[in-house]
Image (cartoon, rainbow, N blue to C red; front, side, top):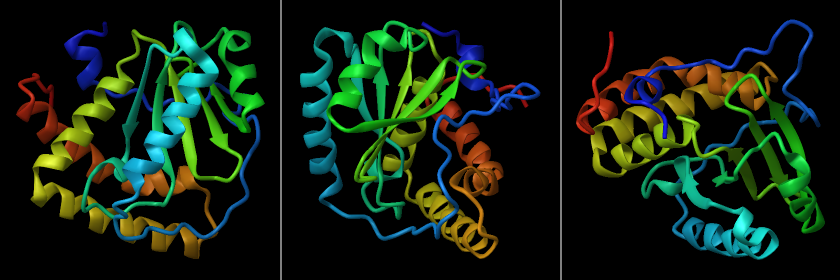
Length: 203
């Protein structure tokens, strides 16, 4: 399990010189942030069943995270899912079963907690693959749960998302640039979420 300091610290995951996170780089396309859809938890449940059936005991945990997991929060209509496996770097152990059911390997970031991402062929879901010792899943769950409880921060984040989507779309940027545009607001909310969870935050 990661330490408290690892959970409350941030590693931006900048690629080393000459490296790229993309296995399949997506084209720049308009970034749509839409109102919350009550059907999103059911979409997650369907995909979770597909993942568990494909992976069996290799799926240590599967969790709905991101904005589609927060009732009332606008989001891109793509379900973000955390998949915990024993070691993301051992791709032959978990990747072929997911490719067999239509997922496409799009991101490989060994420098950032060995993160991998596979995308549903119909673009309905992004599955983020981490190992059990990574602090990132803890961060994402704390953030999700804080937004579920706190309507003020939920609205702050909603406005940041709308503004970032409009700017990134106008500039023909990818989703990574969209995420960077939200980063300052996200870090502010994280600090409040960590404190609410009883974690020590170093300013």
